[in-house]
Image 1: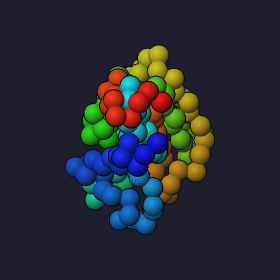
Image 2: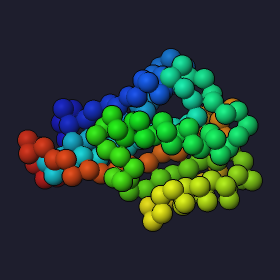
Image 3: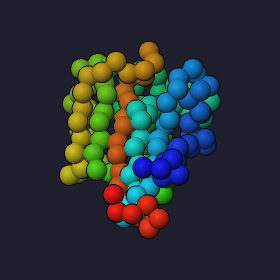
Image 4: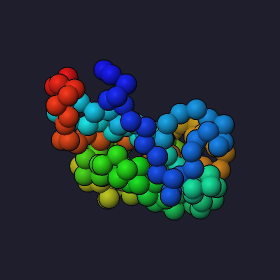
Length: 145
């Protein structure tokens, strides 16, 4: 793999750059292959483009905003929810499992969704969502690997 195949994805109208609050990861990364494009979206939460937590204390609303942020990242990577191969949802509180599972399954149907307990990044976050997507947008320069 060449570094030219890798693109870091932002959605500054929805999310601030991660370095603004002291972490060093990319919000999303796209990797171009000869016959497809993979998009990996890191754990994404309910924040705005200033890094402020939105919908404090409301896991359903936080999930909705997290998905809006994920959708913006996917769009900037020339992908959409229709290209998603799976989701992983991280919950702070086990009591939110049924709500998160139901909302994800209702919205995304047959797309695999794994809901797990996890130490989400910031104390005010109740939920984070990550996903992977694959598009048929290939680039012949990179072969079929």
